[in-house]
Image (tube, rainbow, N blue to C red; front, side):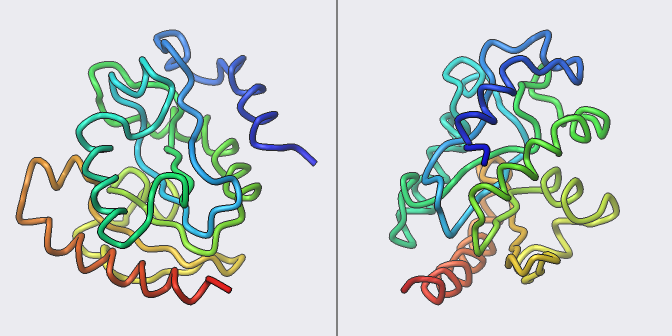
Length: 186
């Protein structure tokens, strides 16, 4: 059976879309490979592209604080993105770019096998649930995958940094996530 390390190694050769041409480092994913909680964001920014690690910039620092507020760390969860290479000028990845990367993300989900997935922002929601989905309407509501994984869409930490009125809704979402996470523990 393929491991996350083997999948990451295979992906370093990926040229399925034009984003590969501009990448510094592949930003595969990070965290506990047996995590019960997986977080999925949009794609790497400048800091992530330089370090090869998702969520290390300002939004990542906020995500770390959010996790700490529910008594978790990066080592407890698994963090990935829709696309693994930085879109130019931090633009939203195109649907074509996302579709090129989704098989890898699906494989990551399969290998980690989380009980909960948190979709951080519109890009994750629209690429994994429905292109018509709106984060403002769906955040804070539990969804479920065909395989039984609980899914919670919430605002991306970068959106919270831009608009502090999103702090309370995100806090409410993460309280529900914490409650569900506790149910998964032995």
